[in-house]
Length: 63
Image (cartoon, rainbow, N blue to C red; front, side, top):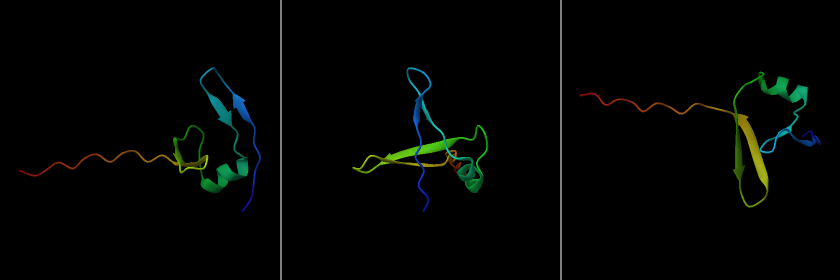
């Protein structure tokens, strides 16, 4: 497992950014402006970044 240390940068009064190394972007096959989901979980301060999957549309019932 590789470990990266990154800086948290303020972009506006309501937003921050974290840069992700280019090699990780290539490894995950992410693209510019791709939607990503951030999940915050557990009692430890951890979060997970993963591909965003659009919600499924409910199936229509047949009459």
